[in-house]
Image (cartoon, rainbow, N blue to C red):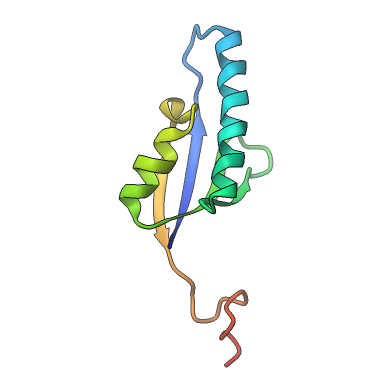
Amino acid sequence: MKEFLVEVTTAIPEGTDPAEVDRRRAAEAARARELIAMGHLVRLWRPVGETRSIALWRAIDEAELYDKVLNTLPLWPWMTGTVTAVESHPNDPGRADATS
């Protein structure tokens, strides 16, 4: 599986019914739990004082990331952001062979 750093900002369209926002947020939380269980959503952060999110996702490739992961998020139509494919750095302290 490849890893992707995804940075998004969610902008709720003006005039959206608050009940629709609540429904989508609840569905988003449920879908996130499913994606965690499937091994797609690895980490999720929110920079202090900001409304954007940064997540580490795993997928076979970028097509799967969009088709079977991101596009299934109920809030995705309201999100804008960037997707960056990432790979482990040779000096990454999380790598098993980093000190070899």
